[in-house]
Length: 91
Image 1 (cartoon, rainbow, N blue to C red):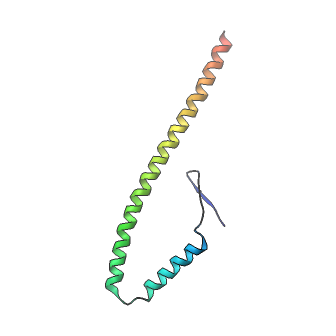
Image 2 (image 1 turned 30 degrees about the vertical axis):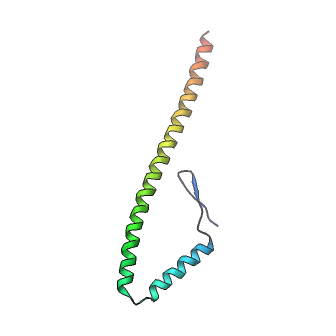
Image 3 (image 1 turned 120 degrees about the horizontal axis):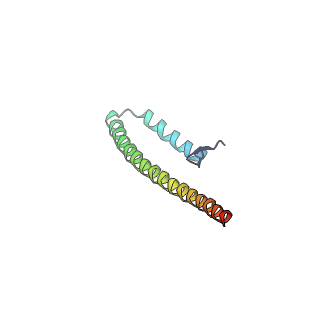
């Protein structure tokens, strides 16, 4: 099982059960001869994908903001420690 990483988040592949379910749904679509239903289904999927893309972009933006805030706080802490040490040496 390969684990990938994105923005320090481990992304695991889908379990085999879900992959099988998706494969079965794809085969069902491919067997269909009803082009109107397939067109409706595809347009529905395109719209849903767009909604998911917007949602994911919002989540990623928020995650990046939180990571940046954390890094800034850590850097301020480090700078405060350095400043305190310098003051103590001068005294």
